[in-house]
Length: 310
Ligand code: MLT
Ligand code: MN
Ligand code: ZN
Image 1 (tube, rainbow, N blue to C red):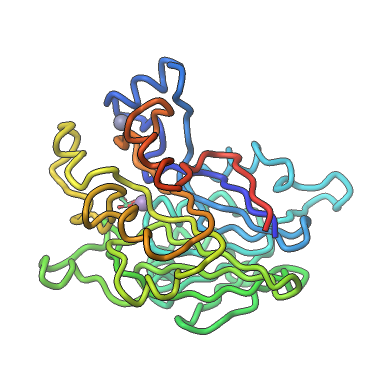
Image 2 (cartoon, rainbow, N blue to C red):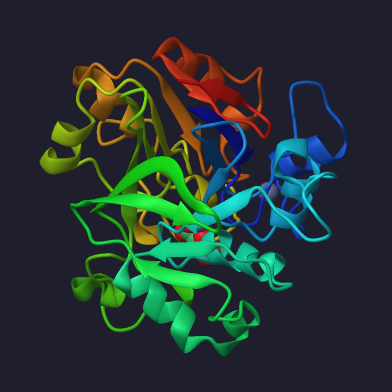
């Protein structure tokens, strides 16, 4: 399998358009040790020709143009695309808005939980993806789905599973005690396998906590892309950016007793890469002590264009 990080930043990207926090100001100024990142998406291919997108960020047009493998082929006819399917792990803007870039009557298949497909159905703007051209298929949680797109099988099988998390911000309703109206399927993780080679990896870009079930699932995994939104739960409050903690946003933090570095320690995961990194996160500075601590704990900090072959 070929895996490429199209975007490693969280919603808003890095820098975020209206933000002049320390990190955003430094990356905008071109300071050494900082690199810009677009919003959260991965591309995967079993054969190096047909590609499946894991989430579709608002930056997708730029991401495709920055990735020659994802562009229309010169020898593929007047209209063609190597993008055969898109798999959505939630209804967040940074996960679904990129679908709007994929209009223009190109056949491919959109996969999501029933909750996410309901959100697409409720928002008529997504009908620019003509339903007679772009099929929408439900991912049943806990069972493996062979991913098909225009032209047939992509050679990838995906198992979606519920993870602790939250409904998209713009869909929140009700009280904290009801987790703002969140239901199973609002936040999912993916196990992506290529049956031909027997290889697999996990993609969990949004996750509130590593409960026993998720820990068991990820144990001994060869490769996990994981939620790296914040370094500390209250960093956005301390930086004066927002009044919300990471927990309130449905995101586990990297550091601390409840954080992902600690939670992954007993799991024997061979390769661990943070994605969905918020612009407030000090690990975005290559030279920060937090970055050093993260790498010393065996984690990599994802960046746009990062390529992995498994
Ligand atoms: C999140 O990851 O918490 C959301 O993308 C936040 C947002 O929609 O701004
Ligand atoms: Mn997000
Ligand atoms: Zn910022």
